[in-house]
Each structure stands twice: as C-alpha cells, then as structure tokens.
Image (cartoon, rainbow, N blue to C red; front, side):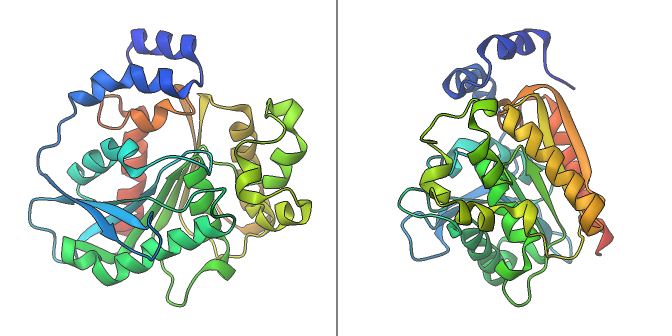
Length: 298
C-alpha cells in the first residue's frame, strides 16, 4: 500500500518543512498498532548523558539463533533529534521480527566529528554484549540511519579505521544522508545552504582539511557488504546529489553493488514518518532488504 493522494498533495504543499510534515503524520502515527512488542527505554550504552537507547523487542519467542537486530540512528542535522521521534520505526520493525535498537547520540556543537561513528560503534558494542538478553542475534546486526544518522552509519560501516576488532554487520541502510562534507561546504549557493552553515559547521568545523577527512566518499576502506542507499523524489537537493555520488563511487571504485531506492512522492522527512502508517513505499523494501541480508548468513 502506498501514500494516499491527499497526503501526497499536502506533502508537495508543505515541502521539506519538518514541523509541517510532523503535523501531517501526527494523527496517522497516533493510530499505529503497537501490539506484540515490548519496549525497554533509556538503557545506558556509554558515559555521556545522551548515550541512552531504547530496545523494541518482539514478544513472541525468538528463533533458535535469535532475532536479527536493527540499529536505527535518527536524523537531526547533527545538532538535534531524539530516538523518541522515530519510535514508530521501533514499533514497526519489531513487529516484523527484528529486535530494534533506537539510540540517542552526541550532538554538535558540544561534540564534533567523529563522535557520530564512534557512537554507532558504541551501540554495536552494546548489542554484542547485551543483544541476546532481548532475544537478538549479535551476529545478525543491520545498521540503519536517516539523514545525519545515515552519515554516521556510513562512516562507521564504510571506514575500517573507525571499526573495532571483531566488527561484523550483515548490512546497512542509508536513508537520505550527507556523505561529503567538503561538497556541502563548497556548494552552499547551489544547495541553498546558509552561511554560516547551521548544521555542518557545528559538527565538522570550518577547517577544509577537516572537511576532507570527514568526507566518507573519499575514505571508503571496508570490504564490500550488502548496502541499500535511498533518497526521495522531493528530497533536499544535496541529499539527492550525495546519494548518487556515494552509489557511483562504491560501484566504480570499490567493488560494491548497492541497492538504490528512489522513493516516489516522499520528501526528506516524510520517509521516516511513514513507517507504521500503512504506506509501505519505504518500509517494505527496507524490511525485504534486511530479511534478505540476514537470511544469507544463516
């Protein structure tokens, strides 16, 4: 089932306005089915006050090897956002048979690059130690992120120098993320990004050498693994460009064969809100990808 015509029209009218998009989805998510899921909130995975995560656990008995584990990193332009804003994804994915982990992570300007991928690694370590207690399979981890969260997941998953010993994941899902800090810093006029940049500069800083180091597209060193890259029809222009750039680099230079998902009608914010609403245009291909990559390793 896809988006209704009425909602599609309203999304075109409001554009990439986060409060307006949130208001459109609020009544839909108020009716979301949350049955069959147990939620554990504010579990500690590190020393910072934002090192807290929620676990959405299927209530039914897990399979012998445990449920696959999906770690979802929220968006927020590196400077805002909370796990509660994407609780709908936790409820929905747990109903599909995945232990779903939604963490908070450190935010700029208090914390800067590379705190994002460091926190992804911190959550991964937590899953290795504690995931089985919630019915999860620590060997069946898929990382998933949206917007800034996708940038953090991409850095952790694609850059082997940021990975700890024993690192292993089944795959990753990147929803409309920025992967080239240098490009965004040097193309503000074309992308309509303000100067000073309210998102990237607090996280990446103003030093172009730091932009170079933080641009994941130039520092892919991990061996190929299953990957899904998405952007939306009405996405922010810089996200569309960077999704295409990352896909092209991975295919032409690094031997990857990612899945590329272009989501009709949605904008930058609506794709995350759509999980659990009956609109399966984003959630269904994501769930199918996660199932495929987890089944391959069994």
